[in-house]
Amino acid sequence: MTAPDARSGTGRPAELFFEDLVPGLTVDLGVVTVDADEMVAFARRFDPQWYHVDPDLAAASRHGGLIASGFYTVSLFMRAYVDHLLSRAAADASPGLEELRWLAPVRAGDRLAVRVDVMGARPSTARPGLGTVSLTGTMLRLGPDDRPEQEVLRTRFRGWFAVRPAEADPAEADPAETDPAEAEAAETDPAPTETAPTGADRPGTDRPDAGPIAADQPTDGSPDGGPTEISASPEAQRND
Image 1: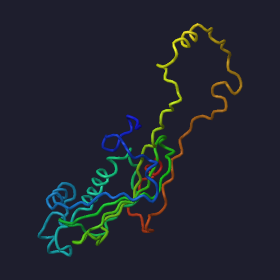
Image 2: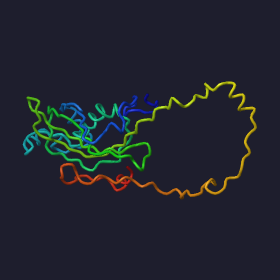
Image 3: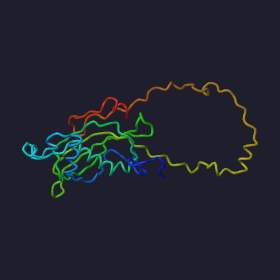
Image 4: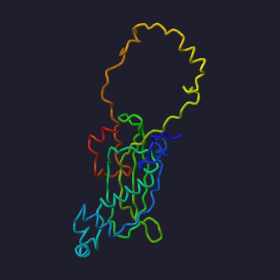
């Protein structure tokens, strides 16, 4: 049974946990269609460069028309990631990304197939109860026949996911089910004599002082051997 506090990224009860996200797993995140009005509205608000917002200048340029802001494209990826994976998984925060590449222009009307591949997974040493999962996300433009034509976005990042909650041990007695006779006998038995702890029983014996928890080391290199475009900050890399 899922623990009540094992929530997905959208707040619903989680059904996928760290143990389910094994290296080699590919998750289909569906197909998104680029909406022209939304694409331009995003650019006007967040990235108002002329080739994103001025159709006349863009048409007369080497772009041949408006192209989407790269941050709009990665926002489409994020929405698909939430809808099709984080909405089911016991997701926590993310310590950051190692790579974000815009490989080809994205235009209004494009249909983009989205997927994420699990590249690695390990228990987090900085966040007990969580595991660090290394992921690669891709978006590919589809042709009229629904076959992939071109990769337009690739991102490599990490996410924290909760480990699966331990099942309750049915052998453990429920206090509410204790035999009344046994409970009465326990109350009448004299309390054992307390003795002062000695040696290894003394509190603090053989226990090192608490020190900083070692952070996980980030994965090295990109899956395709290409250069890292955007590196996570040293702080983010230390806090897996």
